[in-house]
Amino acid sequence: MVLPGAKNTLRRRAFFVTGIKALAGLFGLGLGIPLAGFFLSPALKKGRQEWISIAEVTQLRDGEPTKITYRYARKDGWRMSETRRMAFVLKQADGGVMALTNRCTHLGCGVDWNSVTQRFTCPCHGGAFDAQGRVLEGPPPKPLARLPVKVEADTIFIQDAYA
Ligand code: FES
Image 1 (tube, helix red, strand yellow):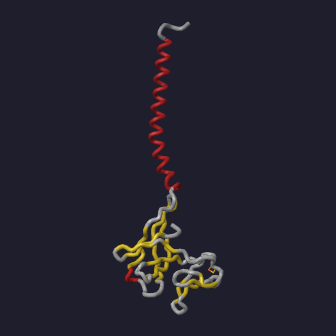
Image 2 (cartoon, protein in one colour):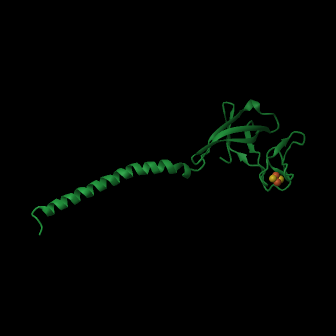
Image 3 (cartoon, helix red, strand yellow):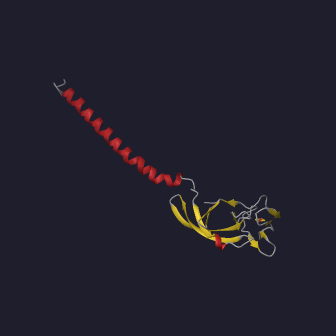
């Protein structure tokens, strides 16, 4: 036997319970989505190419590549670290500036510029490149990689190839 009004009380109670659950769900989504984005976004982001200031144009030698060592802060997911790299920068005949990585295109050893022979040489397997990074001899399959470079008010900026 159902008491008079009991059915209405049950319906009202079910309505309030459903309403409270819906509000709790909305509140949870309101907090959960931004929190999930905050914690997951560093892992999902691809390396952003930033311009790194590496030298002044006045530091460059005339007629041959200048070795520049630079550091920059690198973000890998949630971890920040400082990375040290090396590049060779060369003034071009037209007044422009070119930047090359120091990584040999054979197996990645560090090449160095030899002022006497006027070529980059790789200590690992004898690869050699000219001042423009073109292969002269040895096993390297392609030229040294060029880095994006720009000059602003005499300051040279590059984008790191491995950022
Ligand atoms: S790594 Fe440079 S020649 Fe092999």
